[in-house]
Image 1 (cartoon, helix red, strand yellow):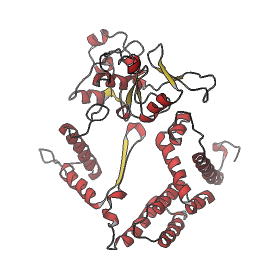
Image 2 (cartoon, rainbow, N blue to C red; image 1 turned 60 degrees about the vertical axis):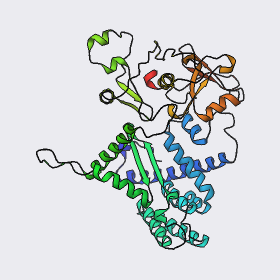
Image 3 (cartoon, rainbow, N blue to C red; image 1 turned 30 degrees about the horizontal axis):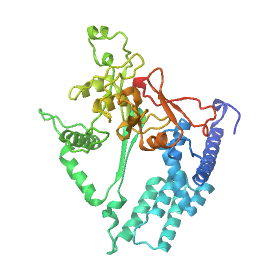
Image 4 (cartoon, rainbow, N blue to C red; image 1 turned 90 degrees about the vertical axis):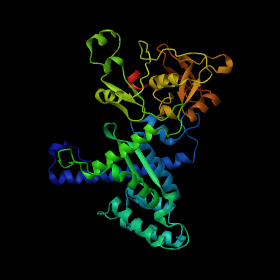
Length: 412
């Protein structure tokens, strides 16, 4: 690499170094995938408390869990697709297009013969290796192949095969959520039909034209569809409660009245509220949601930890689970990002051993880490600040240094 500062390089040097760095990045990604593949063949995470390589990578680096999952998923696919793996490691195709071709190789149209799949794989790799090719071009080629083989009368047509459905909802920048999907014709038509009336242009009463773009109208229609489903109460029970959006905020943040603020002298104003799935949201949005919601008041101590909510029941009550969600934010195990709705309320001192069902004896754990606490030497305690502290077994850390459990910023 050039040792000069960027501002010292002329135009040709800038372009040359950028291309060199792209090649280096490809080589590093290739090496990273090879190492992850090797990790699959060994029990390198045994006893570390992580249920998968992606979770370990997320907990050990600054990478988002989605990026870690994509990287590990690519390694897993390339283990099954050696031809695509060779092209990727040679630098002929990048990670995204390698993933596309490998996914096709593992899930071809049902009526394709192995010889046809091999031929199609070669065609797709040839297309993906061109400098001008992008993911859309590869995807279009895959669709043409699926259409060709979907014309056969035996088997479900590709366009109507619900086993091929995919739906992604991933957290992006600013806490926004990106939604992507690929549905069969019937369910796709069902979605479009439901959205049709909800996303139609709506002129103002004075006849002024609806200025929203078609994309914004469809997004508004989809959000309205979610609101109507939620209000109808049709969703299943999760984490002991019906589907709902949990927004956590301090009372001092939620009021503009100085008299009320003065009544809460020890309460910190964080300037934001917190949701389970997308993290921080603005106080203004939290106030908007509070106009039409059920409010649960949870008293916090000076460390931002909910106070005791009762000891009588064996299982955590709904108010207790909400308080645990405030304190732990989800699975309390270090490095785990499982949301609170998917977690169990774990007794630190077991109920059968006389452990009470109160907040100082409960933590939220996902299924994997709940089993880890019960079946390994990992231990957890509630520290002086009334937040969880984990102690690894000696096989992981001979000194068994304490590790602070997860805690969202709203409770920090």
